[in-house]
Length: 266
Image (cartoon, rainbow, N blue to C red):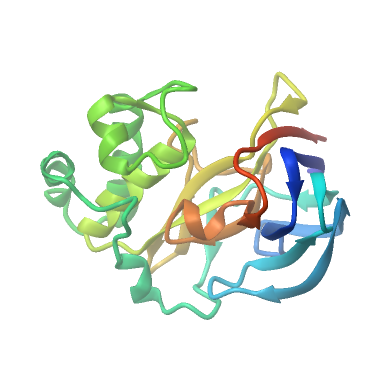
């Protein structure tokens, strides 16, 4: 399948910003299930200073805002050929060792409730694939998908106890439990073509667990499937912080308004 993406992030500020620096992880890379045909990053109100590969082998652009601007617009767009690999990405690569993906973060730190939840899966034996599918289904059953109930600071435990969340929260809960079970797991950010709409207001998140016989395998907890040809992987990491599309620092004003416009279509 050939997918076309336009992802616009438009920040506006109440006062001029004297200095602003952003890291953009908005550039997909070739892998077993996708081939990037063309991709462009356009910036209005700033400029790309350099590009590099981070520790998770993500493509990162460093964007410097123009002095004293009150808005910056960043658009990532391009075309990607995809195929359905049943979520299987394959062998581990990049600069981070596999054991690093067993490390919990502040967002995935297990609580007493999550430890109790994890015990049912530790009894499933050595079939990691079946265990991770069962884990994904159980999270979707326990934590209802509901927008505007959490935010980017919500932890896995917060969402689990609340019983509501979005794809980011489902991902963090999966990471927490998988790592407790001894399975390396990582967060994935990217795009999903929806069957019933072109316009979206946010990118998507899912997870991958490492299974020795298969390598990295994807699980979209929120949609209860493994990623297929409708998905484009962009960035991976230990949690949201490592794979967020845009993050940075600024001087000169407090507060901002962010409007995101995203289109993914065949």
